[in-house]
Image (cartoon, rainbow, N blue to C red):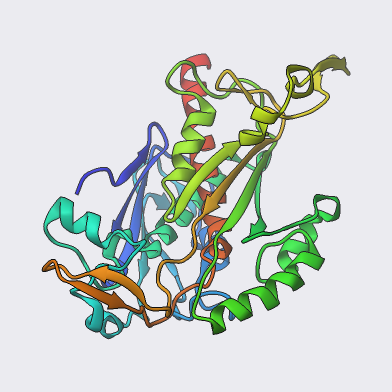
Length: 356
C-alpha cells in the first residue's frame, strides 16, 4: 500500500492497523532545538481519545504516546521523530460475524477490489483509529509553528441542527462533549444523539477550524496553494465528503461587491473589512484568520439492518454491532485541527526555504 506519507518539508508517515498491537507515526523535517516532550502531544490525543462520553465509541483506549526517537533531553534533534501509540482495547471478535460481508458506506469493498485482501477487524488502515497518529503529528506541527499561531476547531452543525453564530463562545467548547461554541445548541444535540443511538442510527456533522496568527505570504502559486493543500488535508480525513474555505460554496450566491474583502490601511498595515476569502488569496495567506470547514458523513457502522453483498458475490443483510460513534464528527474536531497544523507547519518551512 502506497501513499501513507503526507507533506513536503514537514511530513509524516503513519503506520499500523485498528486491531494490531499498535499504531504510530514518523514525523520528518522538524527543525532541531524545539522543546518537545510526551505531554506536549498527549494533551491533543486526549481530545480525540474514544470513550470520553456516551456520544462517542466506548472503545477504551488510553492513547498514551511514547517518543521513540528524534529528541534528546526534551528538545528535537532534527532527526525523524517516531511516535508509538499502543492498542489496548481492540475486540476483534466483534467483527467475526461480518468478516465476509461488505459494510455499506465503508471501504470494505474498495479495499478488496484494489488489493484482493482486507482487514475485516475494524477496517484495518481504513479505520478512524489511524487518525490518532495524525493528531500526534499535528501536536508536533504546533510546536514547529510556535505560540504565535493558534489553531482551534469547533463542531458547528450536527444533522440539520446548526449553531447560532451570534452565540459563539470559544470557552463553551471545553464545557460540553461536542466542542460546541453554542451552549444552547449543545443541549439540543444531546437529546438528538440520544434518540439516534436508541434508534440504531447515526448522523453527519460539520466542523470549522480557524487558524489565527498566520502571517501574510504563506503558500505558493500555482500548484502549491495553501488552500488547495488545506482542502487535500481535510478531505483525506476518514468520512469527510466536503471541504470549503472562507465563504466556500456560499460564495456562489454572493455578488462581486458583497464578496470582495475590501482593504484599508491601519497603523501602517493592510487590514481587511471582511474575510469571505477565509484568509487566503491566490493560494497565499493574507494575514487574516484562516477559516476552513469540512463535512463528515454519518457513521456507516449502525445497528439498523442494511442490504449488502458478501465477498463471494451473494446478496445479504448486515447490522453492525460493536462500539461505534453515533456521530464521528465529534472526534473529528481535534483531527481537523491537527491536519491544519501540519499543512501550516509545512508551508511555514517552505516559505522560509524560498524567501528566507
